[in-house]
Length: 563
Image (tube, rainbow, N blue to C red; front, side):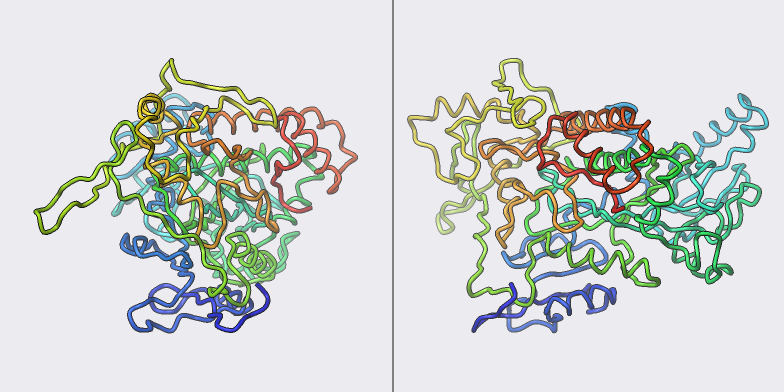
């Protein structure tokens, strides 16, 4: 909102617990006309957005107002610990198969030390000299910026004094001018229940500052691409062949370096990366509770091997927002502005006197199997009747199959894929009124099937999820826009109709991603012979072909870095 009106209050941003934070965040907030948090005024907290590097205490979410926002979701950081990420992806791979084959074999220390020794012995026995030269990488689970990481070939060279993961090292990465690099991708998740995810079109490529070789595995500047490590290297400031000085490129530069050699396969790799990010988020979506006015801002680190296969290295909870080089400024400053635009946060002032969000309706009643509320007496006569909410059933990554008598409708029109559940008109997603006695019999029958719909354990749980989709500033994530600036919605592929509950079934979600990957491969294969088109017009041709394969309309956004 550009103008201000009399009585408007400034939009106040808060950084961590002591007012210190990334300088770029301070700069972007100042450019938007926001004011820094100065403390408490009476008994009310006067802040609108709280940006914190680590997770918030659970009590902070309970007191969140309509015009207060926080940059972390409860339990949203599970994938940001290396051991938790490995366990989640291992579980999903056992269930869904090779679609989750985008992480190297991993062992958790010290728990799986014996398994690691057994695997090393098997490789030496089965593969001889080649097996004994296999390289492994050791990563502490609770450290970042490359601290504590080293490579080894024999377990005798490894010393483990803390919890860590050991992974098979990707020995043949894709190189540019002989230098190893990985990709830093920025992801925003404003809702996990149901999952809504955005991927920023621009990003960073981080290079090692010494040329890659396996003959020297103890030189971190050859094998580790963390910019915080490589900026201390002896060749950081040198003008390296094709790379230049420093150690970062934008994704736009990477595309131009790859497209001449790989052609249509270069376009396909970005679609595979999109699927990789979506599948990783789905791994923890079911275990994340609904949260209103909260979002996650991740940094995904992805490595490409010499066959252009993407590998997930790790996920960062609070990606670095420093501006150490020109590439940082080009990518990060507009990204933060567009992130706040995506979240519906205003320019200049809040306009609280005119723009009050809808009240956060709390579900405080207990619901029986028929969906009706019942008062529960928990105290004596003085305390009277109190409303107690029934504990909902836990939702795991494996959703049970629906009963055979479930009512289903097929809606192939408008690009909708898969089976959609028919919702009874007696159960409205945004209704909070109790049903009349005359409709109890019909509602009871419908509610018997309600527990099977995409992980919704009770009607109250479904109402809570729908309430979390509507933020206090009026943004509805069940009707999320396809693109804001360079933020592209990568999931869901299509929005549900107004009378449908947003899909939350893990099996259907993975099936949608699998169908997307197959369609992208077919488009790449069909267009692979057309090497003459090597500019942005080629992307438009591929996008149109992909929409036809998927039978999606123009509202479906295809993600790829700018050309």
